[in-house]
Length: 258
Image (cartoon, rainbow, N blue to C red):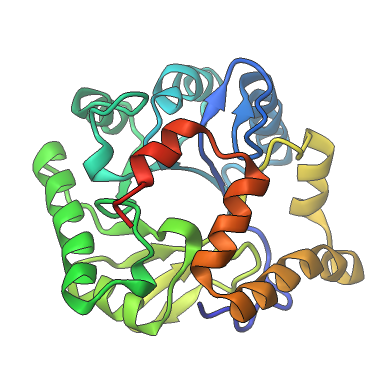
């Protein structure tokens, strides 16, 4: 994964995964009240409309059932990145749900076909993951799809080149401090992955920090990047999966597809 030039970058995008009615042990499942507090804070800071944006990964049904009504109430728009082989599965959005998101003004992007580690795919598998997912969404929506978020945030120059050749113009990563810029003929954007430990005060601090304070906030991410480089993607993911207590539904859907 490329993580250069992250020193003074600002946070411009955030990504959520599952939304729940109650607090979850899965650190990436944010409850409804917490999401509402985050979105109100963004609106009040004028960040939701002036540089900062909200995204959702995976296509969980809670994005439609819980997050969508809340965003409509607050006037917030988002990008929903859909793992296309999961459409219609248990706890995932159906084709009808995805079409409705576009109809009411949100954007739809790809999150690959199977949520694979794209940087570890063969050239043919990589091409298929990218092109097939884009084509399915375009057929479903009758609208161009040129944006993708990278599963697990794992990318390199080969992945970016494949994104460009399969029709994408913008690629979202999980590097929160990445400078947005053109790489391998695609625009690469960083995002902050929101955890349920981030209350509204913590998130405000992350979004508005400057100077040495911001540099200190970057340190945990840089340490994780160093650990990934030392032990490899799959071992890091096993450790992350255990620590994050990812829900069984995600584990079941992902198993055997990576």
